Image (cartoon, rainbow, N blue to C red; front, side):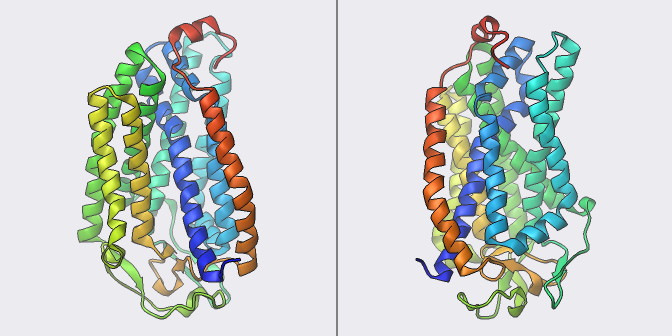
Length: 379
């Protein structure tokens, strides 16, 4: 079995992979539903949009549950601090996500235009809110979260929900919305035809451009206007769990130190920008598969950029830097990480194979004639 330090790094990577998996899979159905009232001009067109991801959306959300479970098992202190500090934000996300199964299952129960239109807008809002709040939460990690630990490791949080809605947090939220909406629009380009496909193409162009502007803007803001944290003391990578045993200073301009120490990390923001340009150009030339590849690269690049910049911090503290939680000292025991690694090594490949199989078996363009001929068999 791996030593303690290696297992910590492995689980940092694995949780990152789970978050990327959630953004790549549930991201396209969140983005597609945000566009639902705008791309679908008639009820049949909106049903076409929904049925492009209907076989997959429930499975896609499992990535989020799995990532939260892995966070709880690998870094329980981070789980406790984040779910307490971001309590209202997460509650809003939870209630927004509640609208999705209700909307998908009930919108077509009544053949009433007003009934269906209300559900469509409910679904749109229920997908927009999580997309925005996830980005806002990530943005606030760069600013620091107002919490501290006492000598007994009890967490005190002094912030509130409205404090999360600061200018940089909102900009990060807009990056997230633009990124996921581009992904959803590119998905619809691949899975639809005729008028819906053309509207999706224009949406891909619009939101890919919005992503590039907001992503680069957020990077410049970090560079010139935000100071990150650095661990100044020597960390015992294989020692006891004690987040308060380190010295932390706010002396890292723009959270860019890691990009100087590890130049290979600079590939991450480059991938995000290249992905955005590729999605924009591919949509312009009506190459749907390339547009989807570009939006996928946007997601991978953006999330890796954030993760690499924060490393090794998982949840910095704005009121007591020494209480900041890192992947080295807010972690579970060596044995826990080892058991989890064995379980992940068995089940993650099985899940990936099943997911790939389901997409292959259910692939194809959804047409209006399909929905019209199976009015009671599809969403």
